[in-house]
Image 1 (tube, rainbow, N blue to C red):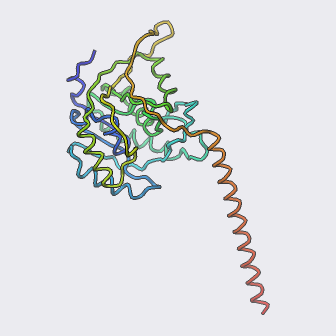
Image 2 (cartoon, helix red, strand yellow; image 1 turned 30 degrees about the horizontal axis):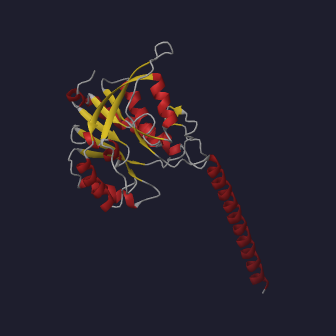
Image 3 (cartoon, rainbow, N blue to C red; image 1 turned 180 degrees about the horizontal axis):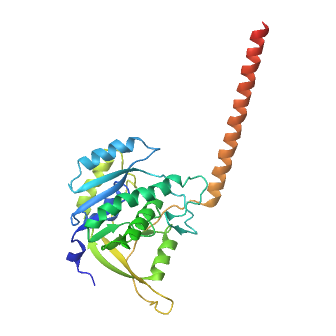
Length: 285
C-alpha cells in the first residue's frame, strides 16, 4: 500500500491541454513538484495559443510549463463503441479524421518525456480510457506507460470516466488489480484557474462545470489471469454524462462532404469552360 506522502516525492503531473490539469487533478496541483502541459496550438482555433500563453504566464502556481506541441484534433476520431488500443494510443477509425498528426505526436511526446521523466519517482497523468473519451489523453497515457517500462517511477492516473469511455475503462479494470488514493478537490483553486482560462478565451470545457467533491488517483497492478481474477472489489469513479457521436452521423457528414466536393468540382469546370469561351470570342473579334 502506498503512503500519501510517498506519492508526491519527486512528482510531476503531465496533462494534455491547458485546463486538463485543473479539471482532473485540482486536488494535487499544489502537491506535486512540477506541472507540465503538452499542447499549445489548435489549428482550427488559432486564438487559443495566445490565450493559453497568457494563462500559463499568470498561473497561480509557478511550477507549470508547456511543451508547446500542436494538437492533432483527433477528438471523436475513434470508434468508442468498439475501441482499439494501438501503439500510438487509440485507433483513429473515422475517415473524416487524419491520424498522421496523431501518430507524429506520439513520437514527439516520447522524445520529450523520456528525457524529462527520468528525474521523477511519481508521475500523474490521464487514465488509459482518456477520462471522458479523449484520444489525445489516451495517447499521453500510452506514451508514459511505455516509458515506465524503461524507468523507475510510479504511474498514477485520474478516476474520471464517462458513458463514452466506459467500455475501454472496463477492459482495464477487468484485467488488472487497481490501487487508489483519494483526495478532496481543491474547488477554490480550481475556480480561480478556470476564471483565468475563461478570461483569456481558451477554456475548452463546459462553462457550467461543477467539480466533484473528491478525486481518486489509481495505479494498475500486475495483469491478472482468469484464475487469479477477483470479483466484488469496488473502485471510485467520477462519471460524466457525454454526448456520443454516432456512426450514422459520420456517414451523413461524409456524404455531404462528397456532394459539396462534386459541386465545387463542377463549378470549377464550368468556370474554366466560360474562360475558354470568352478568350475564343475575344480572339475572334
